[in-house]
Length: 154
Image (cartoon, rainbow, N blue to C red; front, top):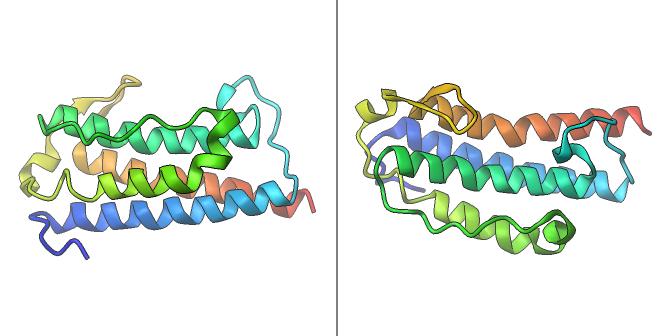
């Protein structure tokens, strides 16, 4: 899968991102079925499970659009994530679209360009490699969070 990537490190991270996004979606559905509640916080992304789902889906789009923008690649044409009130109903379709559009943009980028550093949308400096790693860890972190909450709220 994705054997045509010039930089195998990017290929691995794109495939890992897909795996962990799918695992997050499975865990999110389990948390929803178990009626898990998120800890109280002022962060609007944790207002509800639907807000958390929207946050993870929106971030997946944001990481790739940022990378394409910084590398001067064509817009990957990833649609905006559905809002929290529609996130659950539209997540299957949206997830397939975002993951499909993650597969191609970085395929032709040479390895040295993944070391260039750029300012992220939240003000931190990231190389393309580090942004890809961040994107991989994001759904993984939230999967872990939901697993812990399920264990604590049983």
